[in-house]
Amino acid sequence: TASSTCSLLSRCEKLDIVRKELDIKPWDTSKTSIQEVITSLLDKTDRDAFFVADVGVIIKHWQKWVKNLPNVTPYYAVKCNPTVGVLRVLDALGTNYDCASRTEIESVLNLGVDPSRIIYANPCKQISALKFARAHNVKLMTFDNLSELEKIEKFFPEAELVLRIAPDDSKSVMRFGSKFGVHIDDCNDLLEMAKEMNLKVVGVSFHVGSGCQSGDSYADALIMVKSVFDMAKKLDMELTLVDIGGGFTGSDEEKFNSFTKVISEKTAELFSPNVKIIAEPGRYFAAESHTLAVTVISKRSIKQEDNRQHPRRTSNNMRQYNYYLADGVYGSFNNTKFDYAKVEPLLLKPSNKQPTPCTLFGPTCDSIDVILKDTQIPELKIGDWLYFQDMGAYTIASSSSFNGFCPPPVYYYNSIPEEELKNL
Ligand code: PLP
Image (cartoon, rainbow, N blue to C red; front, top):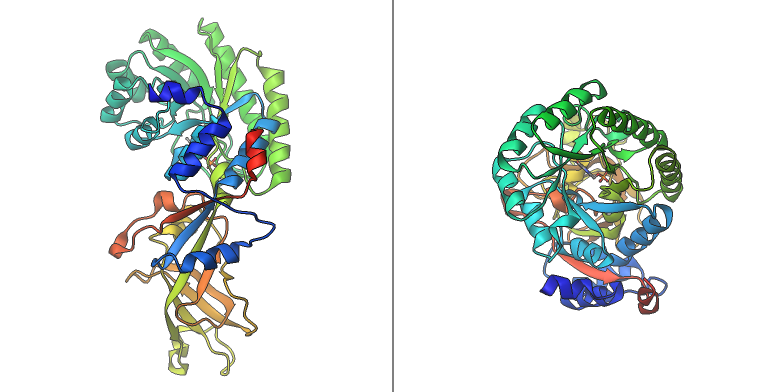
């Protein structure tokens, strides 16, 4: 079959196929800046906003992961950025996948990925999706409540279950504890019930929250996992899998190094070597790989008489502008609402004008469509371009086409030299 032939290919050969099929252009970052790449694309596109994705960034992060956590298999969290370039490059590297829905499972299976490389990591699943998972042999899945067990007993009794516990997520930007994860005190009951139903529990998972700020969160959660392993043992259930979830930073190397050190030490201390350790990193791989370029489509100078609405303007001489950009919070900048992102506008062409106060709006007819309020940028004109870095995580994934403004296209580049790819 196509997928078994493909599994015989080396990483480099697989990447080569992806590079050709997605038309990924080589990019020597020592010679060509991101501004030059964006400028070169302006002649080739009629779009008012687009992404430049550097798959080299994803590859470098993968190399770093393998170096720091050689015993932790990454299952990329598709929800973070489900675009074909990210999924296919990670597939070529041999990464597995965390899927949260039928559509995510389908798009990963459509790449030719074996179902054993998927974890269906949504503790609350639709029955239709559960049936779909069974039909496609996607067995590994998380659960954290009794009604989920009842559903699984009825619709997928051969599933391999991972009990998601609720760790302390107070040191993360995006917390999940109010929605997911069973309290440690209720784990024993759930394990007993699974046993009564003849369901197979294989392991324990947690998510310390996205944008985690402290390695201690992982250490504490791993201690909780160990206590669930002990509970299971008393019930004659042998657990063999620990899923440490996501939460990893891709942009702060020091922090990543400190987290991974804690994780390596704690997993070695608490679990025997035949326990499989997996993770569900999303942001780690995707965030830094994408830059968004976006043009100014309209501009409004705030007049003196508008002063009432803009009480912060102090000097009468100081002009203030509203700029309307081709992408907004209903699109890629939804990260400013859903992901607490702080975005930084950068000018494609350097300007020697003084920064002036302004607000950046998105293109829709809704006044909530504010990307950045009361910031300072040298005066822009219609048709000028801005760019925003680190826009790969939770941007395209959760953008809508409200008012007919569709998500921007992605142009792919690879900053890793050909020679280095051969050694992957
Ligand atoms: N796993 C699960 C179950 C999640 O809900 C998420 C994020 O929402 C992730 C993994 C990925 O998290 P991160 O992007 O912080 O790595």
